[in-house]
Amino acid sequence: MVVQLSRVAAELLAFATRYPSLNGAAQWGVASSGGADSTALVWAAKELGREVVILHMNYQQRGAESDGDEQFLRNLAARLGFRCEVRRVEPPDRAEDTLRQL
Image (cartoon, rainbow, N blue to C red; front, side):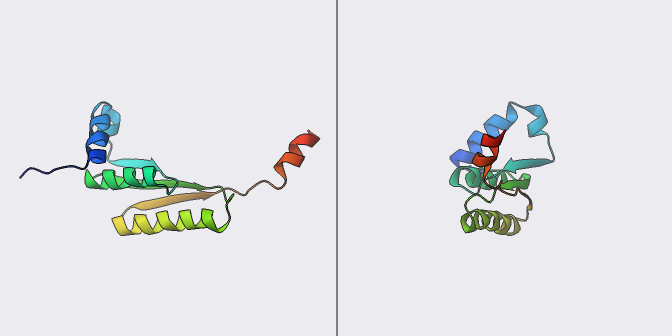
């Protein structure tokens, strides 16, 4: 049986085979913003049968939109049977004013 890979999965496989430590890893960590590119990478890894941990940093700079990206990735991970690790970073208060005082 011949399996036809998506273009993204084929490119990811080609990349991984150039790096034995990546290709031989039991699990891949995929940093994801929740945007189209990193989401495609998660799906491609799934297509290749890889175990993935989705890694996300929520900088909380866009309020509900940032929280929506986080929730999207948590839901995606659950749907695909992956773990999702999220770190929330508190936004600095008045960062520009603080820097001017230094």
